[in-house]
Amino acid sequence: MNNQSIDFYSRLCLLGVMLCLLTACAGGGGSGLSQLELLRAIELDDVSYVHGNIQRGILHANQILPVPGYPEGAPLVTVVAREGALNVMRYLIAARADLNARTPTNETALMLAAYFYDERHGVQRHDQIVRLLVEAGANLENDIHSYTPLSYAAYSNRGDALRYLLERGARVDASARGGVSSRNTPLMMAAMQGHTELVRLLLRAGADPSIRVLHGATATEFALKYRHAQIEYLLACAQSRPLQVSFAAHCEGVQSIGAR
Image (cartoon, rainbow, N blue to C red; front, side):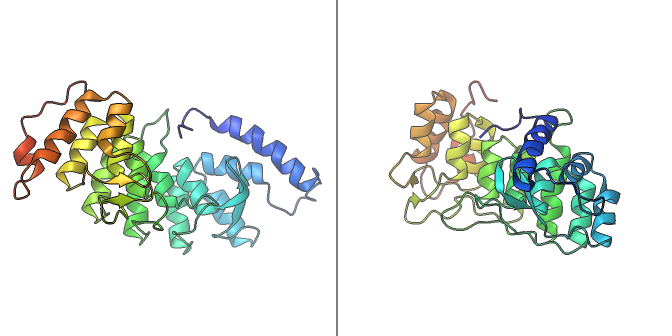
């Protein structure tokens, strides 16, 4: 899942080839929208370019764009979220874009903002986009058989985004029912990646370490599989606590050996 290492210019080259195949490299006659220029504007967070093209009717706020990773096309708002284009996102929200539009793989803008970050500038812009989307009414959850924004934040070690989503009411165990989940829960995602402090945060928020992914493992078994001994210890403590005692009270003395 780690696409962080793919830089924007590599994606532009790939997109250029793909667009030529889709359009037979036909000339635009000067009146159409250049997809390459649009993606470049998004990468630069050039809101004036996006605003100008929407004002001229060349682009619209719910445009579907063919981009690397989504050859069938992805909603503009999801592309903007993935790139961390903060000012463009503000504009799309004001333009009443569908904030819950989904990519062909059922990812929302909030999921992508909670997962991706800029290796050069860190997570700040994407964290701000997470907040913008939630405050504007984006769904905190997803379909029952899909991952959630909280799961993506847990996998990508996005601590601030994870805390914020929990504060705003994201379900800590996603759509798990009766001790079973159709997709990895946020706790499983953090456990398999070895994100000790996020495991601790999720357990404090009430995450259930006994949940099993359908036909698969529990968070403890994922930690064991990937050799994250410090997380196994935390999860064992969580499972041993009396029902009336909180995780924090019961496991406060547990040390996070090798925490990330």
